Image 1 (spheres, rainbow, N blue to C red):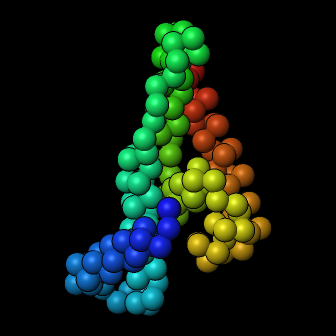
Image 2 (image 1 turned 30 degrees about the vertical axis):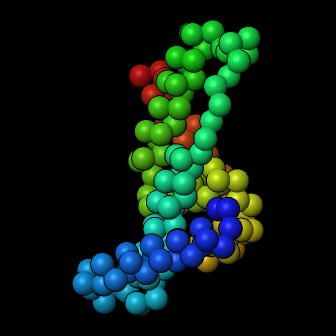
Length: 139
């Protein structure tokens, strides 16, 4: 995020989503846990939306990849997206934060777990994704 204005926008978005969704709170967990999940999901959506709006400049033709490399790269990206979609909500959140270049310590603070736990979970997720993608390529 860029600065104070973005943080304020995110805060307002979290409050709005909590207000809209408060009728969905069933009391099966603590209210603070429910609110945390609303905030986390809103933040992830906010970051995704912000990332999509990033301005890009096209590659100079001299640096462009051959067409067959682009196709293979896109296939690999699609396979990764499909594998990530199959993860649990918490594992998806970990992966999204990791892909946003957060450190394990930062992810731990955001998720409310230890950095060690983040490292273990990320290693397991990476192994699972490699296995799924390898299986998809062979099958």
